[in-house]
Image 1 (cartoon, one colour):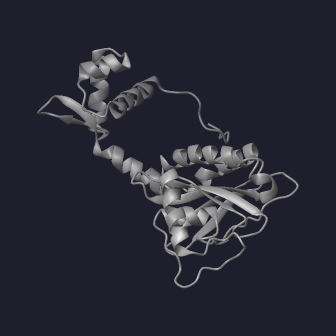
Image 2 (spheres, helix red, strand yellow; image 1 turned 135 degrees about the vertical axis):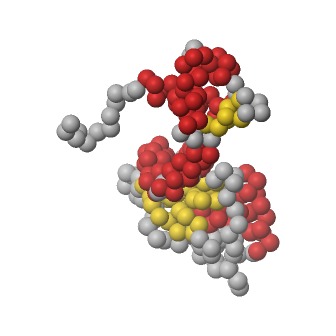
Image 3 (cartoon, one colour; image 1 turned 180 degrees about the horizontal axis):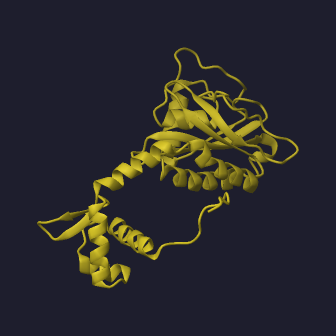
Amino acid sequence: MARTGKPAVRQVEAVQRAIAVLNVLAEAGADLGTNEIARRTGFNVSSVSRLLATLVDGGLLQYVPSTGLYRLGIRILQLANVAREKLDIRTLARPYLEEVSELTGETATLSLPGERDVLTVDFAASDTSVRSVASIGRNSVAHATAVGKVFLAWGGQLPEGDLTAYTERTVTDRAALTAEIDRVREQGWAEAIREREPELSAVAVPVLDAAASLVAILGVQGPATRFAEGPMPDAVDLLRERAALIGSVV
């Protein structure tokens, strides 16, 4: 058969039914018996019994002899780990960056935390005539950027010595900065208003994995003259929703 360059669309009913059984067990959060699975899927008991036997044989389900119930098998975890390792968070986040940029009219950024700093690894620039400064590989100063403050709130460390004042609004007092970082952690997002550059403002949110560890940071930045009155409040909600979606699969 010739390749079309597009994914197949025709589906196999038996596979659809097997997926339904797996979904029922995943959503139940508990072991289930054949009759209960049949009730929840709407399939007849004999069909469910054959599906269960096939899924157990493939390691996707486990039969518990002491209870006569079924649970998700170890093979599910193995497949999930392989899929997770293959994920490129930049590829995963790219559609969300473009969406947020389009909805806010500002530049959306994706940053990854390191041991001592956090770097921009992708961004979607706005189509407005005046754009904010964003570039791949740019370091986000921890104490003077929204992205940096998220980094600090979720385990990042400040450098030793005096903190640089990039503008008159940069917070350089460590006690005041600590209080702000505590607030960022509590509210779940950070802002920086003219703190690294006189005409730039931004908000940022963490992307957390299932263990609540920081894996990435989503941000929106733009010229301060229009940013504070325009997209900032809406941007926070947009970013938090997209960060949760990304965090659920990384």
